[in-house]
Image (cartoon, rainbow, N blue to C red; front, side, top):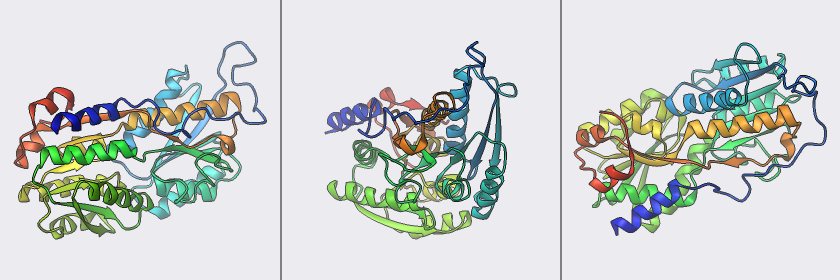
Length: 343
């Protein structure tokens, strides 16, 4: 059983194309001015506005991956590319203000990191390209008409965990907590992406004879109480919820006190104290978004015709120190296969 489970996990980790709609975007009908400096190989300077909902490892990684795509393409920050990075500190009103500022700025393109930031940008910015990343369901969030054909000036990359990978995450959970029957999830009631993930988790858990117990929060200060209120759960699963991941240390503290293993949906959560994940690589996702931006800026591709792309790389990560603090022994075969972080 264990070997079969982890063959599934490793297969998911090596995904190169997760959805039929993700790659091969269509070209736009009209191109902007040549970005190669009149054919002499010189890059014209571009200004990029970045609205990040808040600071936490996953969103920081996505932003850095996006910027790295420009550097890899030959841009030099401060010379041929300017990044105006602004952080909303988790406040929707601030995200709206940032978006409005970018709408009237000289930005050639705007990146929105996380669903609430993307929703604010999509509403405020109508005459320049907007890309999003770290958004789970762009259709449900009213960012695009469809994943295949966004239909407006907004497109980007989704951090939705592929169904096979989500299955493997819960199989990993059962490897680490073999007797688990109830799995707790704490998530933000104000995040559409979290509601989508919880529904998907409930479907996968049902197939593994696991019961999902949920508690919602509205602020980071609610996380410890909500975690404690999960009751006698046997494990905790943390989706890519911006509010909860931003306050992961308080969830982990309760879990350690109660000796409840925590599994994350992405590697930043594991770095923050969860035991393990087979999840989204946000640096790679951000770089993928940056490559979309380059196609828009350099080749004139039209966001309306560029399909929403999904993650093509997953990370398999464990935190042995966190496991010890939660009273869990990680099987050697997992340690042999996964990247190790933490103490």
